[in-house]
Image (cartoon, rainbow, N blue to C red; front, side):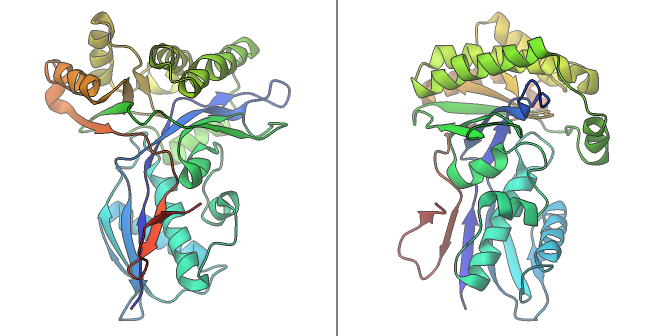
Length: 326
């Protein structure tokens, strides 16, 4: 019996730029794919003829909904889906999009032997990529991503390979989640738009400082630019989340870090998780050691991840070598 295995990375997004048709950058911004945490899944035909789903409660609930949606356009047998690795939801890591795209890609391979549609078309099938394109593009390609938004007149997403030695310290409260669901839909439904001067500042900073810092392997420029970008975006979103950083515990950590000269901390999406870039593994270890000395460290979950410069990976047990989607 054929089994298809899936492994994805996680998506970081450092703040949507909410422009309009005149200013551009409508749902644009900066993002990054990291190797961990990720989704690990194995998909095979269910012996019972009915779907058999194994994993956390929210993960299996979402898998069930994705399969139902896929069956509107795709003939699928009953599937056995076993989740071996999970991305926590609503923590700024893009877990929902990576799960949906990974599962949908595996189902298309299971039924058709290949994926004949683009990642954007795949996202539409499973109800993702409503605003940002970073999670969708990152699923296929990885890397550091500059999304120029839905009204882009040229290629919407530009990609840069992240230096392999760089590391990303991911910090989030053990308890707590960022805004999501109906609350998020209501907020964006009010059509909030940034002022033109903020759009210009974020787009220039994103392109000429942060993205250029990745392209040219200038870590200091990248870290300082990312911190500035995150703060500018966070001030705009503070009207919804209470501050630049949505978690009071994270605010205290960032304050201590900046006093001690550690640069680059930026929230991902609605948080509450943040990313702190490190120039190399030893630098990441130093940051983790500093975190252990912070007052609220006992309430934090800390992970160190490598960048993910390739797309999600699918393979079968009959395949001699694992390979990327594209």
